[in-house]
Length: 464
Image (cartoon, rainbow, N blue to C red; front, side, top):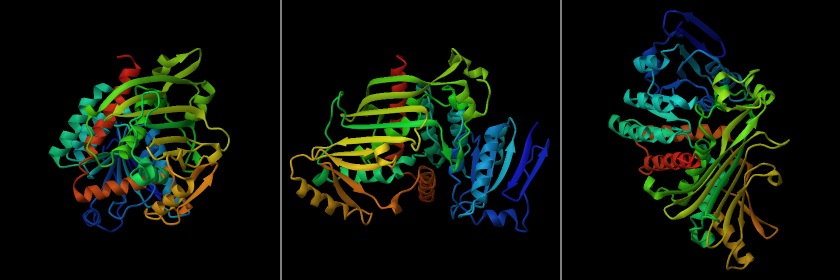
């Protein structure tokens, strides 16, 4: 049975069944007068991942507070609504979102028929994501999509079609690259562009790449102050995607963004040399802790051995991008060590020094940028040059502290933003692009090159 409900959080929930109509509460103002004051109206489709809610963790001046949600029946959209409710009811800077919800098996068709908004937010089960993207674009809607936009080599042609369609329809397709907003990564990029400090990026070798990005993630984690309950399908690589095409999307994007800033790239610039994949083994007890389910669903039985779930969430690739050797690796563990969290390691090797980001126990699991292996210059002279360069960057009071013959960049707390806050930053940038009516000329080629890289790595890792 089709269902529709309006959620005016946190005040009222109205439901209706069988009518196939979404309901909304009147506040004395006409719908037209409300909508005309906002150039952007969001629609959320099948929100199965918590990233869909993080887009709405803050309000935006140009975005209507009314958000239409179209989803199938089930726990995924209910968890999404609870997350929005938590933002609306928090004591500090609460949001004021009004979720208008339509549920039913024809949720996608209903959205495309009604089109109550002009931007579709897609973050959830990745099995149908390419379909959601293509149909939304064909309907003349802009799309803000969580990564990964595709999870298989076979889907790459669909992504190419999607960008052609977006251009033909005069709309935008953009993926959510939050890691570009991490301050240590920004500083690593800025310093790598300064030849006086970094010199030039070396080509590297297959054994010792010029740039490496390595990240470690955890299935059990805290999001927005509460334990994250993951949908069972998150552990199915046919629905979520393997690790080598999922989180690696961020790492490949950063390599392109840092090594070839604002340059137009092409899939032909990529030579995939090595790739491998391996599973994380999840016990039934651990699975219950993160999903709430006592048993592995039928669709996961193909990955169950001796009562444990084998999830191919880990992967590594070594490739060349325009002649520069790069390495990307992602690992998923079940749970972080006490006091720990997700970690990130990044290194760029230059002719003048190495720029390294570490996020381990020694750094208190806070991303920290180091300048290491200073080459061909006196440490005191180099330190003076580095401090002078830091003073020219768009951040005040940056400092360089010498620790064990390595320079540690001291970043004031005011420049530290969380992973969750990065979603608001990405969305704000997307809204700027919407207002301009276009993306930077390098973004679309970059996205195509990025997904060609990840899906080529999967293909190689599986020996195809």
